[in-house]
Image 1 (cartoon, rainbow, N blue to C red):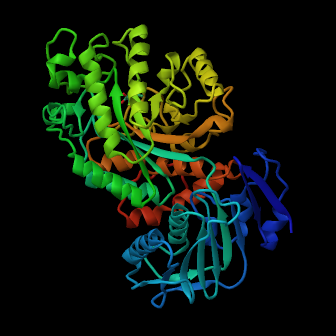
Image 2: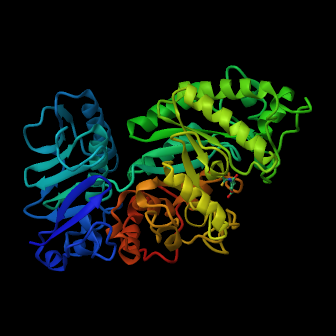
Length: 534
Ligand code: TNX
């Protein structure tokens, strides 16, 4: 048996393929050797459901008899951890939906069925990894953490036929993510969207192991989160959106509800309050935030870069402290995103001075700063994470500066606009969307390597990837899903799967195989011509 060895960050995973045909194709791969024959390709001879997994797992070893998942299946959780029980209940609910099976959840591991096993000492799985073993008497999910068990459950969903009982072929999946941060951003400021709609997105993301939801809560066109100290922000500043619609905002309770819902699915919410630009909604709500003391008109257009907080005014920092303090209190995750992009109406020195103070406020509330990569031109605070959103036309100087910042220890999140901006049109025929970073067909969105993408930025400096959906041109759920899907699945794969499995022909086939699932969930995805849909 040949063995494929691969290094995932600090994690060493030993994967193997025992299928004779797949084994014959196995090669010894050195860490980082992307020319090695990818796991997904090696697994081509594995039974179909394994071959179709998306994101591609680190390793699949098919062997032995399978398990018949059906009316008699019981889900068993180990008694010790209440959270494991909750993960089991949620998995049962997800599996019951399409199958109509009873799937009772019982305490204790012994016996047939699907067993959820927390094993804090399980080697090689890290904080989110898992192992899924299928034999004739059942399927055992093993992980060091409940999050790992949740991800294992999502893999199990894909191993079963859409909507029904079936036999999972015997074998073992061993899996762990390549990057810790796998994110999706939704802009609810340009167009208001309800918490219900965002929860639907959370379900869609979580099933592909995306673990972060970044919510762009404020912008020129609307302020979408209730504030206690500054109530007019949401009440007045939330009452507008692009195109003149009514807008709206979330109450703190609604936001809490989303955070809890996402948390149960191991998705962290990263709230963004964009500053010092993109603040017209705040400037319209409070005259005192303007340097001239005069409130601005609300804005319903799509220009960017025209508004700025009044950097020289102390009242501005009361506002920053109150607003960030309230959001920090509502958010259990460790990150607070403070924007910092396109502050064209803020002189550079003012920008740097403002960002110094805003970063200090984030720290005061015990959170870690995330900001768009423009912060690299100012003074990123220790530990601050920068989110790159450049594209092919971004000046080399800007990228060099970012590489220096990465070298100084700042982790980067990669959201290249010409790859991961989900509001970029697929091609000239796409109705919604923009095209300032070019068209982004499905293949282009997937076919790049975050580990080698930015010159001078090693993979170890990349915290992860994030796909962003800006909503200047997107006002309905159908438009949202049309732009996000199927490109979002490429993001999930880039964030999770080992570099060695990167392969467009194999990926595009696995993507095509997701169609029945997306159809069953009534996702209004784009049937892109570059994907071999059945
Ligand atoms: C750039 S990227 C923006 C947003 C726009 C988006 C439209 C970034 C940090 N700022 O304000 O909505 O382009 O594609």
